[in-house]
Length: 273
Image (tube, rainbow, N blue to C red):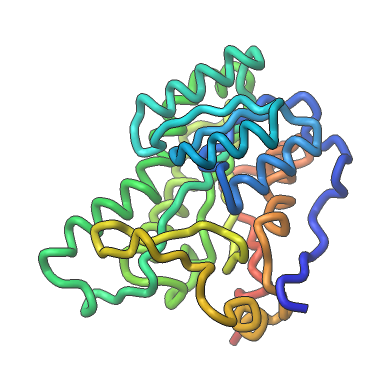
């Protein structure tokens, strides 16, 4: 049963996002790619922003209808370029999704040298938090025009300590605050919600260069699927495709009255005593 997908929110091809013009930031692999694929199956027009040139080439060849923009989500210029490409391709923007992130492999504050603290903080917060703010800023004009919505990626780590190290967990708590603040500030024109996935199989989630963890992938751990099953009440090891239904729902008109909230596709971590 390891890695067995679970039932999503919407049946594939139900048309929940028919005609929605979408930009998915960080969609070259993992959850972002799964979200973009789910959006396409639900009728959305999809543009992506991805930093890795190899992933860009792969996505462009396997998903030719998509508008693929290569760029770094931690720069405002790349986010603007991606938004402009989406508007040029589709005539506007209705949904912005951000799935960018790096992991700190459970490094506690006592495990980080003093001279590593600030570089690690700056790198992890730039990727996990600033990329989301920059994407929102770049997309505000078109989203206000379409009365669209934003779905940001938080994490189970943004709600429960012990799901990462001091930098990762605190950065995800920051994204949680970002969702609530943006939902307050952008209402009533733009809805803002978050998805807080639990552990995920099949991702390319890596560590920060500042901690010499950039070549390490979280998914490479031996026996990870079974370990994930053991620690979730529902005994599931979820994939990006399993999470994608939560993004579909929040981006759809079925969630038209929902803002400032979170969906938790995490196998039921929140009910553990």
